Length: 289
Image (cartoon, rainbow, N blue to C red; front, side):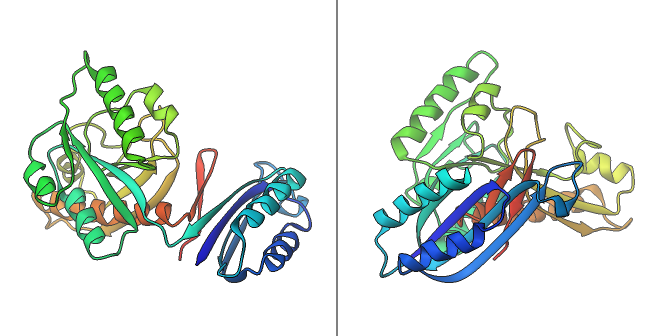
């Protein structure tokens, strides 16, 4: 059995040495370790003023998890840290939300089936019926909840109940084209991932690829981020771009854009599920595998 240890704390001397000593005492063998110091804005890096982040993966076959967690509770008190110990491998329960376009949904399903994404899709929620045959054929519960300005809070209450009943740890907006309320976004901050084209804010609104074509863009892309009450401004997890040329018509930009969106969203889900993402205010620290 392996474990992943995630730690965030104010930077100071002795953090890594203390962590290594605690893991050694609990018979944990480190097999992967990543760390990063983020200085506070306006300070000099050498001042040591800022936040320290660390992700450690260990073989813990001979460890006692209760003793390990107790040791790092003590660490948190001593270093004013937050820490989480997660057994690996594990499968994270996820609710997917989708509207009409299903390219991200299809990509996620394929990667789950092939063992690339360590998640279990416990439900799919949509405001359109289009994806129902695909989802139900696989035995995944499908919920068709139309959303209007009058019933948004009622539908979010049903989503809240679904998350509680399924034990879902992550909500993925796989091209779900409804805006979540500020209350819901705040309640699940750090547990909702969205995907959008990277033209924002230059091409907000309808048909962004067509308007990008009208301006002769030379790069298109996609951004996966955590959802916050500030629309499309949450901490960024993953991004990618692709160069295009004058020969691409709007439909070709859409085709290429959907491919990038699917890839970026799946990468973001994998990074989150593998406990590789730390939220640091409006930014993220992401330890790539």
